[in-house]
Length: 185
Image (cartoon, rainbow, N blue to C red; front, side):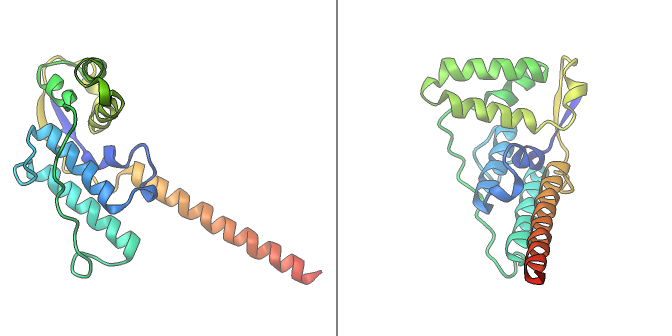
């Protein structure tokens, strides 16, 4: 069975999309591509995975600044420098299902990287969250890697952004209504 990687989904999960700056999105997304490509060369990674990251950054620039790459410099591909191993993708390639790989990954973090175990375990969760078809995979034995290309209409990012915008709009309406009624009295 194949597994599909969606670095955009994992990058946007956890923190809300609006809480992350462009550079943090860039580093996180490319870090996921690096861990699944098993390389630190950002130009040697799977092109579908890196394209999904580039598209995410472009989308974020348009949202945050209202400009694209022609008007605003694209962040450089980050230097992939890890203080700990990214064990999860390697465990998947060995044939573990995602749940078992996550458990083993967290255990390996405690054993091999005790000084940065918490950060290492966060990376395990990040890599786990990058799996698109996680439910169907948890029963499988052997998997091969396949990138999904990063769906930019990702519900995690878009729903959180929409909710934030709605809450902001409703608060503005409430303030205006309140001021109108105060002025009327």
